[in-house]
Image 1 (cartoon, rainbow, N blue to C red):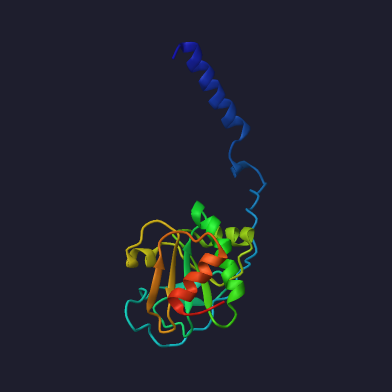
Image 2: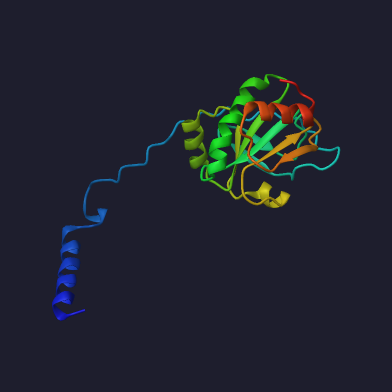
Length: 192
């Protein structure tokens, strides 16, 4: 860099320093990031009974966006669909509204819960609100369940029997409510 270029760069830096590029010299506070209201339901109460009857999910307990906790190692007491998703996952963003449709159609015959995996609660809350997600949703920010189950990538959907045993693991995204209802009927014996 020439002497003239160094002088110009030095002058620019001095000018920036004198004009106050930091908030330290002013009374103004940075604008807080707006918070998004949670749209998801609280996680349901669970029986005390541990999952049994074959292969089961790892005993990972997570907080839920809408309140309460979800212990994935307990028997849910009713057939249950658990969908692992993240806001940064494009296939999850396409699939999650279909999972919500299943939750809306399920009634008392089937429980449907989401699990934000490898993502933050604030990102999960924001995407859930944007996508109209109201089903109970836990947050596994570190991806402990995926790690314990040996999963890589997202999304995944577990179909659990009432005793907590794994009936099926869906390794690819579901694209329609009809496809999802077919999987529920085939693997959990629940017709919707």
